[in-house]
Each structure stands twice: as structure tokens, then as C-alpha cells.
Length: 171
Image (tube, rainbow, N blue to C red; front, top):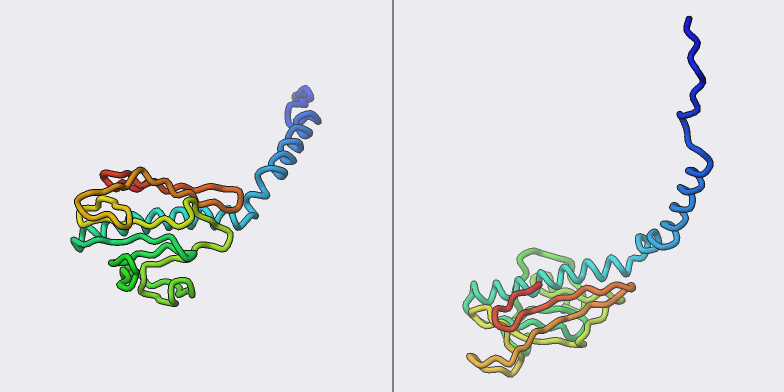
């Protein structure tokens, strides 16, 4: 039988345990509240959904060879084939109906979450049949559309949608 020397290398020192507790405390103060703040997730989710909706508007305008209007007013983002929004663009899928979108399950329309605000307040524009963005009131081929950045704010978070003037690239 061999005598093995005692080894104290298998374990944590008191200093290491205290440092881990301090790190957990810092994380719980700054990071964990963000995980439990639903407003942050609503803002991010709606930002992603709105960006995809604007991209969809441009694709539909090109595919159907007609203007598609994007309307961020009245607490919603809606797509229509006319400026007055009397001819709505159909949604590619069924979704939950909501009052802001006239309870329609077929209209490409999404309500803003209650905690999310847009800046500028009510941007409205349209894509022509070539996918180029125009301001409301512009007549093709002349566009006064400048770079548009829509900022969605809520829950201490910002989500931005940028539309380029000549190409209509949405990012």
C-alpha cells in the first residue's frame, strides 16, 4: 500500500466563491430585470415584424406592378393599394384580428403594442411598381423621398427601420 500525499487542489477557495457571488449579484441587478420586462421584448418583436412588413410592401408592389402604401398612423402599420386605405393588401397568412385593423384577419395590418411609440409619429409613404419609395403626394417619376429612419421606442429599447431613397432597401 502506497501513501499518497494529501492534495488540497480539489475544490474552490473562499475568494473564488466570493467572486462568483459578486458576479451573480451584478448580473441580477442589471441583466435579469431586462429578461422580465415584457416591454423590451414587445418593442423588439414589433420592430422585426414592422421591418418585415415594409419589405413585404415593396415586394408586393413589384410583384403586382402597382403602388403599395405603408401607413404607420392610427396605432398600426397597414399596407394598402391606395392612399386612403380603402383597398387593403391581403396578408400571406391568417393572424389574430384586432380592433385597430378593423378586426380583419386577411388585411396585412399589425397593431402597435401599447407601450411602443414611433418617431416620426405617423410616417406614410408608398412603393411604386419598381419598388422605389415615394412620399404621399408625389407623382411618378419624381420622388422627394429622403432617407427615412423610423424609430420604435418602448421598454427602454429602440428598434429602427431605415428605408433608402433610391432603391427602397429596408434595413
